[in-house]
Image (cartoon, rainbow, N blue to C red):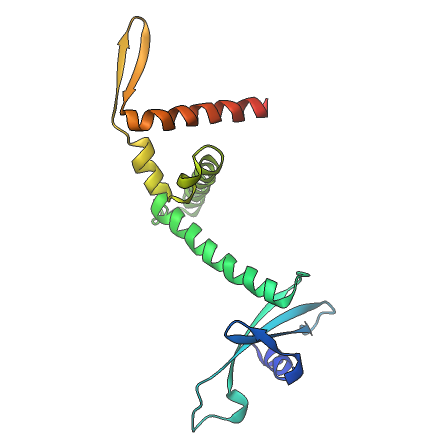
Length: 190
């Protein structure tokens, strides 16, 4: 919060604040210096623990969100908080599930290519989970899917001019469902 935003927040009257979870929420229209474009400022405040040595004007913690969304202030705050939680999980998946925790070379272009390939692998794995795997698997992390699905012990046997994959019966039904769903998705695309 810069000085202008803080001043705008302090100008909100007490009757504009409404209850929101464990704090209060309000909105104002704000315009930055050297521009004519205004935007909504969604502000939350929470009372501080009283202190003998603090000024009276510092009795609240303030948090402001600049937005151009049309929903209510509470809906925007909920969306904003949810977005942060999911993006943290996506970053963790990229780092731990795809192996993007370290960049492989000293070249910026090489690292950019490596990251793009990792992002593509992440997107494909998410698409695979959502489109093909059963509902209980959709909440698994990429690492879990890899360990429980792709690293299943099996044996390829050739005989009578056919190749046969022998796997545990516990995975046979799941693999059959996956194969059928992939075939159905392929037919939908054609």
